Amino acid sequence: MSIAYEAIAAPELLRAYRPGLSSLFSSPQHTLLAQGVTSVVPPAGTLEDLSDRVSHRLRGGGLVIGAIPFDDPASAHLVVPAQTRWADPFVTGDVPAAAPAGEWRITPVPSPADHVKGVRRVLELLDRGAVDKVVLARSLELTGTEAADVVEIARRLAARDPHGHVFAISLPGEQTLVGASPELLVSRIGPAVVANPLAGSAARSADPEEDRRRAAALLCSAKDQREHAVVVGAVADALAPFCRTLSVPAEPSLICTATMWHLSSRITGRLADPATTSLDLAVALHPTPAVCGTPTEAARAVIADVEPFDRGFYTGMVGWSDDSGDGEWAVTIRCAVVGAERVRLFAGGGLVAGSVPEHELAETTAKFRTLLNALGLRTGDAS
Image: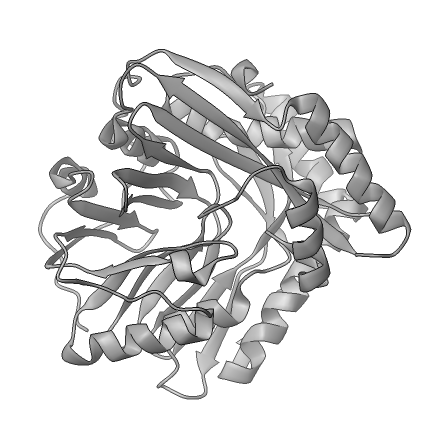
């Protein structure tokens, strides 16, 4: 599918966004506004079936946009929009909106103390060799007297992290999945394949000198380097069967958002078979050890046993795929599900041997800052 860019800036597309009637997805390459719904992709029992159904639905042209959950393909929400509009990506300097108004009561699930207990339970399993890595998450449930303003939240996210993947995806039940993910699961444009796994994180500091120290410490951290290498190896192994060439960096680099430093590796390849779609690649990758752990099934079982909530779309994937197979899929992190008078935020961290429970709690608190800031709330409200 050939993309026709409009002679407007991304903020103008965002102003045309209407929760419940449209979806927005912005990457470092472009911004997509999908308006209306022509059809909904039928639910499927497996991710492979879902990819097949998308390919079948797109035989007549167009694209799908939406979100796929962490662990329930039957709950995936992918739609064929009635109209698509494209613009350039958000850029640094887009003026942030005022903080969204509203008063919120915040309930951590689990409580910070219980999350630390959960981390200790997982560390015991790691020490016994039952699993090598587990990504453990927690959530915040916000209730208020009025609905959150999704447009203003997305505007603030885009202003703070314009080089990430900003999304506002309309979901069933008058809900919206909104966030700003720094992590590209995979993109496919023609034969070019790109994946950008992140693993290993450190909170940013407002003090420039301390911020530089934290970045340098992360880059030199043996624990974080090991965690990152596991993720990169898994992503490369999953992509290799689909690519005739694959380039994997020997060492990670640093990238940052407004709130976090991350270890990053940009993996690039060329497709062996042009019939392989972006969603095929995303299905082969999901879930990476960056959001689940390793071995995958053992980590899934630990997550189901320890986390006291359903992740839903958190740590799934969000993005689009068109009739030519091109598309972009981001890992659904730094996100919230916004409904009438209720907002759910999510944050997690990878646990490996040597992880410190209190440090892991602090990491999730730092990761909540992305959405808390967009809602005009303080970081301290996360703990």
